[in-house]
View (cartoon, rainbow, N blue to C red):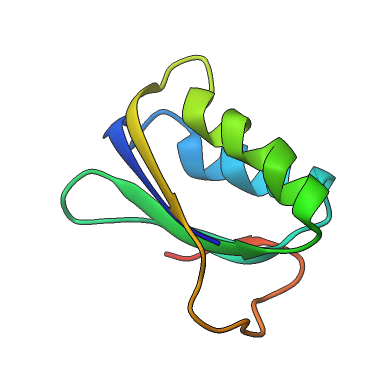
Length: 88
C-alpha cells in the first residue's frame, strides 16, 4: 500500500510512530517527510496487518493532527525494505 498523510505531521514524531507501529506488525516498507509538510510511505505485508495499520496512521501520535490519510494499493508488489525504516 502507498500512504500519504496530510496535516500537522512533521516535527511531532510521526515518522518514528509509523516505524514503531509497522515494525510491531512485522510490515516491510518506509516512511519519509515530504517538502510540502506531509508524510508519505509504502508498506507491504499480510492483509490483516495492513488493515490494523491504517487506522493507526489516521490517528497518529498524540502531538500530530492528521487532516487526511490517502491509502491506495501499489500497482506492483515490490520488494520493500524489512524491517520497516525511515528514509531521510
